[in-house]
Length: 398
Image (cartoon, rainbow, N blue to C red):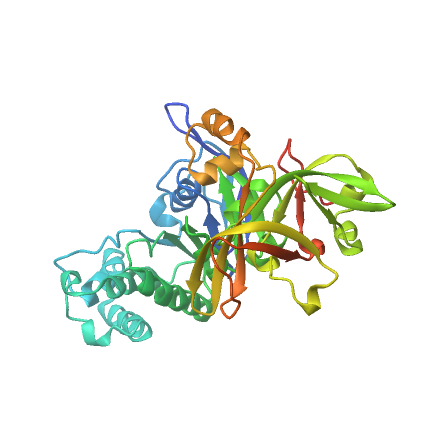
């Protein structure tokens, strides 16, 4: 086992593409770290540099305290699990798992012992003689992982290993991989574009955008305290609702103005974001998580109210997602447009300037009776609001 450290690592391709920019990230010994971000953000490139499949253009990459920039891939003592499994179709499960040991001339008796142990660990005993073509997607994924595990490497590298599986199997395999990593205790770097995987699997999450690390830390900490607008919208499903507005001082109390609506900020909100209270009159971007927008009840008498019109209700078993159009100014930024999949940022800005409503998505208990087309008030605990600078996109924390 070993730690992995990126020290100001760069990757610049021959055509000038700067795929990874000054990446600095510490992955402790035994940690399960997930690199997450949209397609093209540099996460797979960062992983491949650790594996030795991409040359490092600048900075240092260390495994177990040793700089590996120029070390041959075969000497790095890391094992990679690929998106497409990369199994040999003519070999049995046993032979596929044994292959890396045979390639390094491990004695036959030891190969048999180690492979059988891995097959038992992955519940593949009944399939040991079968070939990949006769296995399900989940079973093939287990074989690919077995081939990595049997090497007993210092580090596991996993490149979107669940992307080819159906939704139900992905959920099952997420749990299996997490449990397996916990049992083995091997340092793991896992790449995915799926922020649900990132939230549920890793002990550490690192969010990337356009080759730049945006934020790293425990998944729940990032969810609760995003560093900027990109992280705020990217992490969480449904995404955080964002409004553009400003603050005012009204009879000694700080009020948040969203369109024609005014929300008095509780002391807890100002304590959490003192910069907001110190600069009344400033423009801000305000974020609200779905679970913090609720139908008013007796217990919510002290909460601010946000009015809107229900446009859609999505039942999801124990909860329902309630889409509400709120008359307010929408947020238009490169980060928001990128996540929305808007390739033309300027066109996106022009299209949204005249919009007079923001679509908020609230998560209600399924027993709440709410109908599309109805007017509604949302109870907002203002201490749970997130505030961002509209120019820089950074969180207003101090």
